[in-house]
Image 1 (cartoon, rainbow, N blue to C red):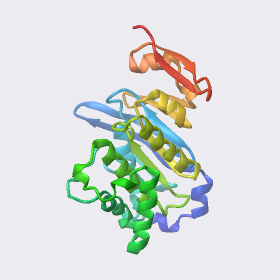
Image 2 (image 1 turned 180 degrees about the horizontal axis):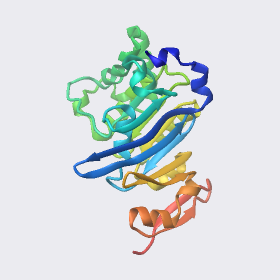
Image 3 (image 1 turned 90 degrees about the vertical axis):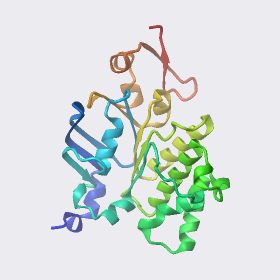
Image 4 (image 1 turned 120 degrees about the horizontal axis):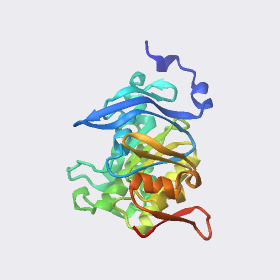
Length: 273
Protein backbone atom coordinates (compact mmCIF):
# COMPACT_ATOMS: atom_id res chain seq x y z
CA UNK A 1 0.00 0.00 0.00
CA UNK A 2 1.20 3.52 -0.79
CA UNK A 3 0.77 5.31 2.53
CA UNK A 4 1.41 8.66 0.87
CA UNK A 5 -1.69 8.34 -1.26
CA UNK A 6 -3.88 7.69 1.78
CA UNK A 7 -2.42 10.43 4.01
CA UNK A 8 -4.47 13.47 4.95
CA UNK A 9 -2.67 16.53 3.51
CA UNK A 10 -4.13 18.78 6.19
CA UNK A 11 -2.74 16.53 8.92
CA UNK A 12 0.70 16.76 7.36
CA UNK A 13 0.80 20.52 7.81
CA UNK A 14 -1.08 20.76 11.11
CA UNK A 15 1.67 18.95 13.06
CA UNK A 16 4.29 21.41 11.86
CA UNK A 17 6.87 18.60 11.67
CA UNK A 18 8.40 18.45 8.20
CA UNK A 19 10.98 15.73 8.74
CA UNK A 20 11.64 13.41 11.64
CA UNK A 21 14.53 11.12 12.54
CA UNK A 22 13.68 8.29 14.91
CA UNK A 23 16.45 6.28 16.61
CA UNK A 24 18.95 6.55 13.77
CA UNK A 25 22.12 4.50 14.22
CA UNK A 26 25.02 4.27 11.80
CA UNK A 27 28.55 2.90 12.16
CA UNK A 28 31.14 3.23 9.40
CA UNK A 29 34.74 2.12 9.61
CA UNK A 30 34.31 1.24 13.24
CA UNK A 31 33.15 4.76 14.14
CA UNK A 32 29.69 5.46 15.52
CA UNK A 33 28.43 8.35 13.38
CA UNK A 34 24.83 8.33 14.63
CA UNK A 35 23.93 6.82 17.98
CA UNK A 36 20.18 6.24 18.44
CA UNK A 37 19.69 9.74 17.13
CA UNK A 38 16.20 11.29 17.13
CA UNK A 39 15.23 14.76 15.91
CA UNK A 40 12.15 16.59 14.67
CA UNK A 41 12.49 19.51 12.24
CA UNK A 42 9.59 21.93 11.92
CA UNK A 43 8.36 23.89 8.95
CA UNK A 44 8.88 27.62 9.10
CA UNK A 45 12.17 27.38 11.00
CA UNK A 46 15.83 27.58 10.09
CA UNK A 47 17.67 24.89 12.05
CA UNK A 48 21.47 24.91 12.15
CA UNK A 49 23.40 21.71 12.80
CA UNK A 50 26.68 22.46 14.57
CA UNK A 51 29.55 20.40 15.90
CA UNK A 52 33.22 19.58 15.35
CA UNK A 53 34.59 17.76 12.32
CA UNK A 54 33.32 14.20 12.20
CA UNK A 55 30.49 14.85 14.65
CA UNK A 56 27.86 13.37 12.31
CA UNK A 57 26.25 16.51 10.87
CA UNK A 58 26.69 15.84 7.16
CA UNK A 59 26.02 12.16 7.72
CA UNK A 60 22.69 13.07 9.30
CA UNK A 61 21.69 15.11 6.24
CA UNK A 62 22.62 12.24 3.94
CA UNK A 63 20.52 9.82 5.98
CA UNK A 64 17.56 12.22 6.13
CA UNK A 65 17.51 12.67 2.36
CA UNK A 66 18.11 8.98 1.62
CA UNK A 67 21.62 9.18 0.21
CA UNK A 68 22.92 6.97 3.04
CA UNK A 69 20.93 4.21 4.75
CA UNK A 70 20.94 3.78 8.53
CA UNK A 71 19.04 1.83 11.16
CA UNK A 72 15.94 3.64 12.36
CA UNK A 73 13.21 5.66 10.68
CA UNK A 74 12.92 8.86 8.68
CA UNK A 75 9.47 10.38 8.21
CA UNK A 76 8.78 13.19 5.74
CA UNK A 77 5.56 15.10 6.40
CA UNK A 78 4.31 12.26 8.61
CA UNK A 79 4.97 9.61 5.95
CA UNK A 80 7.90 7.16 5.95
CA UNK A 81 10.39 8.50 3.44
CA UNK A 82 10.54 5.20 1.56
CA UNK A 83 6.80 5.45 0.85
CA UNK A 84 7.20 8.68 -1.09
CA UNK A 85 7.39 8.30 -4.87
CA UNK A 86 10.81 9.58 -5.89
CA UNK A 87 9.31 12.05 -8.35
CA UNK A 88 7.07 13.58 -5.68
CA UNK A 89 9.76 13.78 -3.00
CA UNK A 90 12.09 15.53 -5.46
CA UNK A 91 9.59 18.38 -5.72
CA UNK A 92 9.55 18.91 -1.95
CA UNK A 93 13.03 18.05 -0.67
CA UNK A 94 16.07 19.82 -2.06
CA UNK A 95 19.68 19.27 -1.00
CA UNK A 96 22.73 21.45 -1.57
CA UNK A 97 25.73 19.16 -0.97
CA UNK A 98 29.18 20.30 0.09
CA UNK A 99 30.65 19.36 -3.27
CA UNK A 100 29.33 18.64 -6.75
CA UNK A 101 30.83 16.17 -9.20
CA UNK A 102 29.30 17.95 -12.19
CA UNK A 103 31.96 18.24 -14.91
CA UNK A 104 29.99 18.81 -18.12
CA UNK A 105 30.46 22.09 -19.95
CA UNK A 106 26.99 23.41 -19.14
CA UNK A 107 26.42 27.10 -18.75
CA UNK A 108 25.42 28.38 -15.32
CA UNK A 109 21.90 28.99 -16.65
CA UNK A 110 21.65 25.37 -17.82
CA UNK A 111 22.86 24.08 -14.44
CA UNK A 112 20.18 26.06 -12.63
CA UNK A 113 17.53 24.87 -15.07
CA UNK A 114 18.42 21.25 -14.21
CA UNK A 115 16.61 21.89 -10.95
CA UNK A 116 13.31 22.06 -12.81
CA UNK A 117 13.57 18.53 -14.24
CA UNK A 118 11.23 17.00 -11.61
CA UNK A 119 8.67 19.75 -12.30
CA UNK A 120 8.25 19.01 -16.02
CA UNK A 121 7.55 22.63 -16.93
CA UNK A 122 7.49 24.33 -20.32
CA UNK A 123 10.90 25.71 -21.32
CA UNK A 124 9.82 29.32 -21.03
CA UNK A 125 8.56 28.82 -17.48
CA UNK A 126 11.72 26.94 -16.51
CA UNK A 127 13.88 29.77 -17.82
CA UNK A 128 11.84 32.37 -15.94
CA UNK A 129 12.08 30.52 -12.61
CA UNK A 130 15.79 29.88 -13.07
CA UNK A 131 16.44 33.55 -13.78
CA UNK A 132 14.50 34.55 -10.65
CA UNK A 133 16.51 32.19 -8.45
CA UNK A 134 19.80 33.26 -10.02
CA UNK A 135 18.96 36.87 -9.20
CA UNK A 136 18.30 35.90 -5.57
CA UNK A 137 21.80 34.40 -5.29
CA UNK A 138 23.51 37.16 -7.26
CA UNK A 139 24.64 34.95 -10.14
CA UNK A 140 22.66 36.46 -13.00
CA UNK A 141 25.83 37.71 -14.65
CA UNK A 142 27.19 34.15 -14.64
CA UNK A 143 24.33 32.83 -16.81
CA UNK A 144 26.39 32.37 -20.01
CA UNK A 145 29.57 31.21 -18.25
CA UNK A 146 30.62 27.58 -18.55
CA UNK A 147 30.34 25.79 -15.23
CA UNK A 148 33.90 24.32 -15.18
CA UNK A 149 35.37 27.83 -15.58
CA UNK A 150 33.77 29.18 -12.41
CA UNK A 151 35.31 29.54 -8.96
CA UNK A 152 34.25 27.34 -6.05
CA UNK A 153 32.10 30.08 -4.57
CA UNK A 154 30.41 30.81 -7.90
CA UNK A 155 29.63 27.12 -8.37
CA UNK A 156 28.20 26.96 -4.86
CA UNK A 157 25.83 29.86 -5.51
CA UNK A 158 24.78 28.44 -8.89
CA UNK A 159 23.89 25.13 -7.26
CA UNK A 160 21.96 26.94 -4.53
CA UNK A 161 19.92 28.61 -7.29
CA UNK A 162 19.41 25.16 -8.85
CA UNK A 163 17.99 23.75 -5.60
CA UNK A 164 15.68 26.76 -5.19
CA UNK A 165 14.43 26.15 -8.73
CA UNK A 166 13.74 22.52 -7.81
CA UNK A 167 11.62 23.62 -4.83
CA UNK A 168 9.82 26.45 -6.60
CA UNK A 169 6.50 24.54 -6.67
CA UNK A 170 6.76 22.86 -3.25
CA UNK A 171 4.31 25.14 -1.48
CA UNK A 172 3.93 24.39 2.24
CA UNK A 173 5.53 20.94 1.94
CA UNK A 174 9.08 22.16 1.42
CA UNK A 175 12.37 20.99 2.95
CA UNK A 176 15.66 22.69 2.11
CA UNK A 177 18.92 21.05 3.26
CA UNK A 178 22.17 22.98 2.93
CA UNK A 179 25.49 21.31 3.73
CA UNK A 180 28.03 24.03 4.53
CA UNK A 181 26.50 26.50 2.04
CA UNK A 182 28.89 29.32 3.04
CA UNK A 183 32.17 27.35 3.02
CA UNK A 184 33.45 28.80 -0.28
CA UNK A 185 31.78 32.21 -0.09
CA UNK A 186 33.14 35.64 0.74
CA UNK A 187 31.61 37.82 3.45
CA UNK A 188 28.84 39.44 1.41
CA UNK A 189 27.80 36.23 -0.32
CA UNK A 190 27.81 34.31 2.98
CA UNK A 191 25.27 36.69 4.42
CA UNK A 192 23.19 36.85 1.25
CA UNK A 193 23.00 33.04 1.08
CA UNK A 194 21.82 32.86 4.68
CA UNK A 195 19.32 35.67 4.13
CA UNK A 196 17.85 33.64 1.25
CA UNK A 197 17.70 30.57 3.51
CA UNK A 198 16.01 32.65 6.20
CA UNK A 199 13.48 33.92 3.66
CA UNK A 200 12.68 30.34 2.66
CA UNK A 201 11.97 29.49 6.29
CA UNK A 202 9.83 32.60 6.71
CA UNK A 203 7.80 31.45 3.68
CA UNK A 204 7.11 28.11 5.42
CA UNK A 205 9.98 25.82 4.45
CA UNK A 206 11.84 23.61 6.88
CA UNK A 207 15.44 24.72 6.40
CA UNK A 208 18.33 22.66 7.77
CA UNK A 209 21.87 23.99 7.51
CA UNK A 210 25.15 22.33 8.41
CA UNK A 211 27.51 25.15 9.30
CA UNK A 212 30.76 25.57 11.23
CA UNK A 213 30.60 29.29 11.97
CA UNK A 214 28.91 29.58 15.36
CA UNK A 215 28.32 33.31 14.97
CA UNK A 216 26.65 33.03 11.57
CA UNK A 217 24.45 30.28 13.01
CA UNK A 218 23.54 32.47 15.98
CA UNK A 219 22.69 35.38 13.71
CA UNK A 220 20.41 33.56 11.28
CA UNK A 221 19.12 30.32 12.80
CA UNK A 222 15.98 29.97 14.87
CA UNK A 223 17.26 26.77 16.44
CA UNK A 224 20.73 25.34 17.00
CA UNK A 225 21.36 21.61 17.35
CA UNK A 226 24.90 20.90 18.53
CA UNK A 227 26.06 17.36 17.74
CA UNK A 228 29.10 15.39 18.85
CA UNK A 229 29.88 11.67 18.63
CA UNK A 230 26.54 11.09 16.90
CA UNK A 231 24.48 12.50 19.76
CA UNK A 232 22.80 15.83 20.49
CA UNK A 233 24.74 17.86 23.05
CA UNK A 234 22.53 20.97 23.01
CA UNK A 235 19.26 21.92 21.31
CA UNK A 236 17.52 25.27 21.56
CA UNK A 237 17.60 28.89 20.56
CA UNK A 238 21.03 30.46 19.99
CA UNK A 239 20.85 31.93 23.48
CA UNK A 240 20.08 28.53 25.01
CA UNK A 241 22.50 26.40 22.99
CA UNK A 242 25.59 28.60 22.84
CA UNK A 243 26.95 28.49 26.36
CA UNK A 244 30.65 28.65 27.20
CA UNK A 245 30.47 25.30 28.99
CA UNK A 246 28.80 23.52 26.08
CA UNK A 247 31.19 24.93 23.49
CA UNK A 248 34.29 24.05 25.52
CA UNK A 249 32.95 20.55 26.17
CA UNK A 250 32.11 19.91 22.51
CA UNK A 251 34.92 21.74 20.72
CA UNK A 252 37.63 21.50 23.35
CA UNK A 253 38.39 25.22 23.35
CA UNK A 254 37.52 27.91 25.91
CA UNK A 255 35.32 30.77 24.73
CA UNK A 256 33.65 33.92 25.98
CA UNK A 257 30.02 34.68 25.12
CA UNK A 258 29.02 38.28 24.49
CA UNK A 259 26.14 39.77 22.51
CA UNK A 260 25.85 41.72 19.28
CA UNK A 261 25.56 45.41 20.20
CA UNK A 262 22.61 46.02 17.85
CA UNK A 263 20.85 42.72 17.16
CA UNK A 264 21.47 41.13 20.56
CA UNK A 265 22.23 37.58 19.39
CA UNK A 266 25.08 35.75 21.19
CA UNK A 267 28.58 36.20 19.83
CA UNK A 268 31.27 33.60 20.51
CA UNK A 269 34.82 34.83 21.05
CA UNK A 270 37.80 32.52 21.60
CA UNK A 271 39.40 32.80 25.02
CA UNK A 272 42.99 32.09 25.97
CA UNK A 273 43.66 28.38 25.96
